[in-house]
Structure formats: structure tokens, C-alpha cells
Length: 230
Image 1 (cartoon, one colour):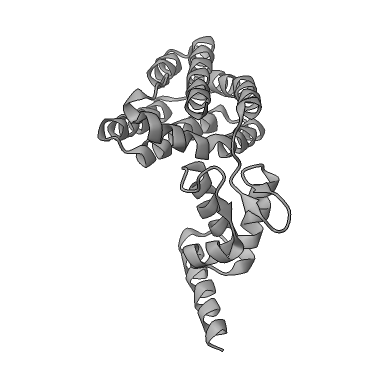
Image 2: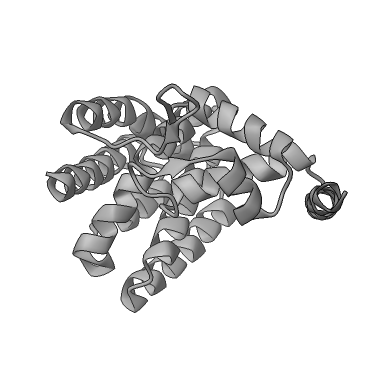
């Protein structure tokens, strides 16, 4: 009976959180677990279990199972049989494919954004980039990861191409944990980005310039991951 009471309280807790965000409980748990992967709170090769996540996140088993199912289907987690699930470890062939996929999609989104953005959207992107610069200056790795992803997510949203954006989000989930490892090795000050060039291209309505800057940003970032994991 005590065991049931504890589980009931866990379900009540996540339900209250979901009510506060307007999201159903299973979606809230999915997003929390997704962010743990995306921002490297779960390390490459780390096993994840339903029991461990329910205790860590203080939620019931059903939404955790659903979140694991969705993230495994997206390639963000790797099911290895015997109910064993781990955070994928990236090797050179996978990094090469992720780089090619990002180059195929993200410059296109940047080019679309350049001909659709307005002054308010550019201002919000600049504000995000300023927060990103602050995280770099402080050596705040998690802050860097959060704001870097936010910049790209905001830019992709401006492109108004939800199918392409969903594909890109899936790619980011696959390399997020490895990017966290690389940030830990090199430090935030040594992480290049082309955000200033992207912003300049957006302000000028230069689609080709935005695409070139985004391609350079992707190539630099993925090269850093390759070198860091070598």
C-alpha cells in the first residue's frame, strides 16, 4: 500500500506540472528527457532504465516508457535488447552522415529565414546570441548548449518549414550528448560559430549569404565533434 501511495504522489506531481504548462503529462516527461539528451545530461554510452528515470524525474512509469519509446524511435536512444537502452556513442561514420544531413537541411532553412524574417525576429535572435556569448565568457557549458540550440531553433522556426525543422531536431538529438563531451574537453571559448555572419545575412535579406554562413557553422561544429571524439 505504501508503494502504491508513493507512485500515486509521483503521478500527481507530474500531472500538476503538466497542468501548469498546458501539456499532457506524457508530453512533459518526453520533453524533460529529450532535453537531458539534447544538452548532454546523459552521456554517450550511459544506460537508461525506466526505474532509474522514474526515481530521478519523480514521475510514474507509463510516461517514462512512452518517452523512451519515442526517443528510441527517433534514434536519440539505442535499444540493445534485453530491455537495455543506452545513449548512443557516435563513431566517425555516423558523424559523417549527420554532417551530410545537416548540410542538406540547415543552410536551406537559413536561406528561407533570410527572406521571411522581420525586424522583431532578428532582434530576438540577436538577444539569444548575446546570451550565448555570455555563456561562452562564463565558461557555462550547459548555458552554451541551451542558447546555441535556442538560436538554431528560433532561426528554423522563422523558415516556416515544419517538416524540415522536425528532421533537423532529430539530428540534433543524435549528436547532443557528444557535443557536451567535446565542450567539456575544449571549453566554451574554443567553440566557433558563425552566428554573427548569419545575423548579418538575415538583416540584409541575403539568402545565399545566410546559407553559406550556416554551412560553415555546421561544418565547424561537426569537425569539432569529430576531433574531440577521435
